[in-house]
Length: 620
Image (cartoon, rainbow, N blue to C red; front, side, top):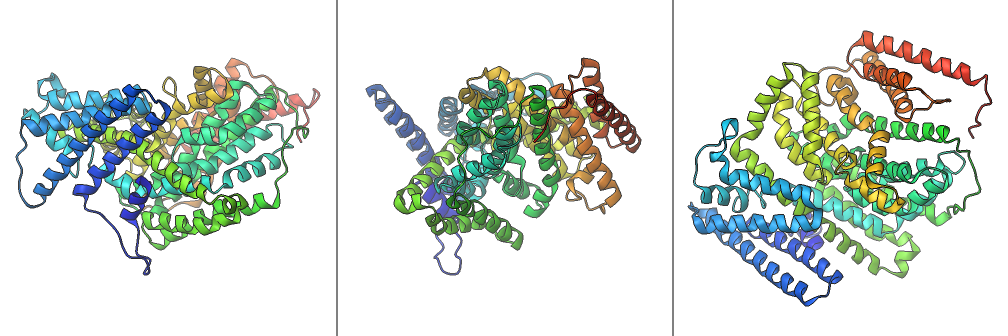
């Protein structure tokens, strides 16, 4: 029901099909919220059959039904007349927030739920806080009701949920149908077979497969679980440690959220918020995303050298069949259609639904679907369940953003950060980056991005960044939070498969994927890396070539420094020097780039000459 009603709300006419939506938000959003609560409850009830659970199901379902009905009832009144909120509405709004926080705690864990609790507490009591945190005195009941539950613009049922329902939902369903159509296993087989003769073969294959899966799935954790069960054991069999195997999968799955064309639907939300075209967003992120994946390949390359892992072809890797190559049409066909329709001017929802409609007949290419077409219905159900989980997290983000809007905290924070940075853009970026990682802990990619940009966006713009650059900077760090200790949820999911240590896997993920923390500074300080999409200024080809050269050299030096190996073991002083040179190569200063390039080149040349005096490790 969640998948079908969600698609019906944004279904275009196609000049043939009758238009069903868009539905009136006064009844649609409360009803959809209630459906998501029921999906959560029923999922838990399936896993636990105790009578107490059934009683809890009934109580929570009825409570959610009441608050949803009340939102619909008052929403109908607000369409035509003014309504003054009183204590009853304040209590109902507080109860709706408490219910949402409770379910979010059960679904997503403590970090995001605690963030919601702090936001509600501050919204209710902000007028009693000291200093700059004090808010304007107001009636608590009216404040809670207007900002948490009964507004179509703010709160749990506000505009953020609206963005998810109109833009993100169709892509989540598309990702589920893509997985259900059976192309994933074929893609993994092809990737592993293609990389079988390289020393880091399974790790390279995991990076490639996770990149493609992640750009559609919208969830780093779902990507880890979906592809990691195949990739991680094979990485371990090649000779890599459990922590490293899990870290490769976590870092690669995380990067899928920044890789065009779909970027887990976040590109579409960003385009909507910033007010630019979808093409501008994917153009801006193209070089940074590719650079991140190059850094992952380099990290695996140096780690394979360090462990002296040799290329081998004796693993039991199944050779792809003709059907596997045909099944790739199920992945690339819908993606190419989406990109073409979006560039042609169709809405994101229309493009994604067009891809879903294309995928249903295309799925008959797969004999498994021809034998069991019911799997497509299961895929829709899986997509609906994923949407329900995301809506629960988005509801908390709605609470946080409503609190920020009502209290003016972002503006106050912008002033404090600007003063703390002492007019230094670099220092401000460092402070903002730390704040982004902290705010993003424990959140899925999309809620993390929306919550962080609500706090940090004003600050970065006031410090001189273009709007799209500021959003891209925040987005990268929101993505990075899922592999950053201590709340590295993607790394923890990978550790559960690799049997490695969770914190150890998270640390390895941060080391392997370290460039995801450095690349945002590079394009913030040198907007040429965004290919001119964030600025109206003409792009200088020579400047761009120098920027790309510096970026690639920085990736090589940083990866070797972080792994600690490049043809030989690197000592601590040399690793620090290489990392410092990498930072210089990412700076906007041409002289610093040239000096770092020359010194880095000399250090690498010295190691190459030194390695020729010792027996070489053969690379196939």
